[in-house]
Structure formats: structure tokens, C-alpha cells
Length: 180
Image 1: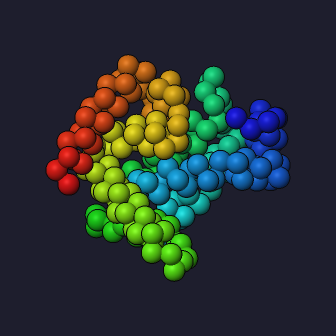
Image 2: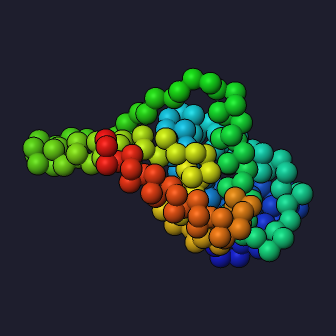
């Protein structure tokens, strides 16, 4: 949570652009990462992230916490944007390079980097084979490092349901990666 977040949220609700800008600066990297892992394409993730924050700016006057963190509201908007994206886009989006790295002449570093990227692509492909709910839980729990309770709040599920989805997703990932 951001220091003074409640005040920033209240200021943003009153229309103060600077307050919303500070919220944006804090949460944009997390929301982008969540979306990127769902769509696996940098430009699309950037566009969707922009749409999430535009939508949140347009509707911030209606925001109420209901006891949940502000980030839960943003993640819910992000999740809905990615769902809408896939409803509109029927094509499979190809994976692009995850890291733009300047290769050095050190062969060991290059080899390790290639192996790491290969492993990352295997994991991305494996995650893409999971159901949408399983993808969301895996990303929120293991990439974004949210607790089961926070994940349940974001996905509007019970904590028990999140643990069950996580268990099934991890089991499925092990099966997929064993045969890859």
C-alpha cells in the first residue's frame, strides 16, 4: 500500500489529477505485468494497461473501498479488460521476447540467458494452457505475490476456492512441463 493512499484516493475522487497521477505511478508497473502475462505481447499489454487506467480515471468518482484495497479494484478492471480483449480478438497472439538485453561477448552469459529465456517461454506457454481462472490465480499468487485472501478479494472468490484453483493449476503445470 502506498503511503497516504487513502488521502490520495479521496483527492483523486475530488478530481485532483496529481493525486491520480501518483496512484498511476505506483500501480502501473504491477497492472502492466499482470496484463502482459495474460496477453504475452508488449504493445497489447501497454494498450490494455492504458485502457485500465483511463477506465479507472473515468470511474474513480464512483469508487468505494468496501474494505478492499485500491489495488483490488484496479486488478478487477484489468482482468475485465483482458477478458474483453480476448472476446474481441480471436487470433492467438504470439509471444515476443521478454527481455531486450544487450548480449555481451561472454559465451557463458549468452548461453545462460538463452536457457533462461527458453525456460521462461516454456512456463509462459504452460500458463497459457491453463483455464482463465487458473492463469489469474497463478499470476496473482506467484508473480504479483498476493496472499490467498488478497487474490480472493481481487477475483471475487472465497479463499478456499482460490486455494483449490491454485492446487489444480500447480498440478496441471507440473503435468504440462513434465512432457515439454
